[in-house]
Structure formats: C-alpha cells, structure tokens
Image 1 (cartoon, one colour):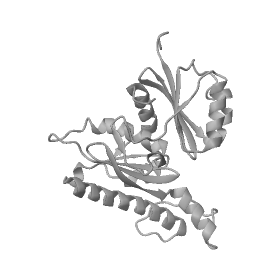
Image 2 (tube, one colour):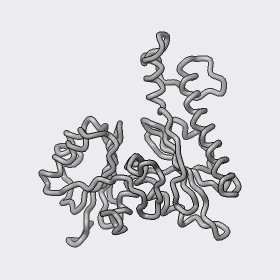
Image 3 (cartoon, helix red, strand yellow):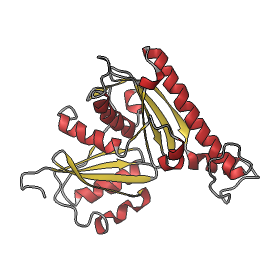
Image 4 (cartoon, helix red, strand yellow):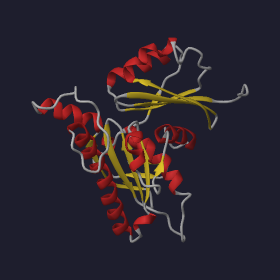
Length: 265
C-alpha cells in the first residue's frame, strides 16, 4: 500500500517489438507488464485501466514517432507529461563517448546507468571491474563500460528474427515458413543451422569482447562482468555460462535511478 504522500512513477521501455513498463512507489517497484508495441492504443481499456494517479511518467523510446505519439496522447488525458530520456555526454556516472552522444539509443543509455550502479558495488582488490552489457532483442547489442564508467564502444548485430527475415528476403530457397530451429552442435537441418549460427555468433562475440576488455584493463577474463538481458535471452539461456549475470529490467531501473538522482532535467 502507498501512503497519500507517496510518489507514483510509471517507467516505460518502448522497444521495436515490445513495450515494457514498471510502476514504482517512491523508489520501490510494485508491478511490471509488457505488451506488443502495436497494442499501445488498447492500454487505457486493458492493462492500464486501473492505474493509480501518476506523479511521473518516464520513458526510453526507440520505436519511433508513432508509439511515442500514442503514449503522449494517453497521458495528455491524465494531465501528465511524459519525460523521455535522450542520451547525453554524461549522466549518473556514465560517460558517453558516442559520436554524436544522442546517437546512443535511449534504452541502451538507461540500461548502462542501472548497470553502473551495480558496477560500483563490485569492487575487488580495491578496483572496479570492466563490464559488458549484452542485449538480445530485435537487435543484438554489446556495450562495454570501463571501470570509471566510460562507454568505450560496442557493436550491433541482427537478432534471431532479423536474421531469419533477412535470409528469407534475400534467398530463393529459404522462407519464413521454415520453423524456428534449435541449437545443435553440428546442425544437419536448415532451421537448426540458422539458429545455431546466430547463437554461435553471439557466444563467440561475448568471448571476444571479454578478452578485449581483460587485455585493455589488465585484468583476468574472469573479472570482466557480463550482464545479459532482452526478449531473446531464453533462446540461448541453456548455452550461457553460469558466470554471466542475467538482468530483468535494466532500462526501467536506469530510468528510475536517473529520475531520483536529480541529475536528469
């Protein structure tokens, strides 16, 4: 239960495929939800029908102008103006060296803010570890953070669905009618070969980036902390090393931290 003086915040992670949200009372999460992004217009009559009175609506949007306009219209009727995060050069301990800074997706920026706070709690032998953030979604994204909170670089790969769609569009022998495959050490079926190829690319890239960060900062590979999240995590979860840290809602966590930090204006 919230007191009459509690501040209720709705945080929004608007992705290319899904909208995820969390409701927080003061600084504590009370509930989460998610729907396909093309169902946003239905929210006032479904999942958000009984939302409490909101004091803040904060969001990271990478889905373009249409979903943002739909959400703005929903909250206009509630007399609340959403605050949308844009990547800047520096916020909440993250130093963003992307060129230009705003080219970094707002969702990536928010997630890195959340993971920086976790990094600060991981001091070992009087030093902080470098971290690698891997998001498995519509796109597969890697972001590397130095011990001092600098975004030193990253990569973007097509996700599982994008690979299938690209192959179907570019080849005559493959189509989306081919069922989604499974991982196989030595695939002999086309669908398994596609799935295994993407999975091996992701796992291989994780190993390579862990090695690069270890070399750059003079630490053992085991000291590089790898955070993994995204809608496609379950596809390769059995293949992931136990040393990896699975995250549920780093974008929402970063948005709430930024709001309460007093640094985000």
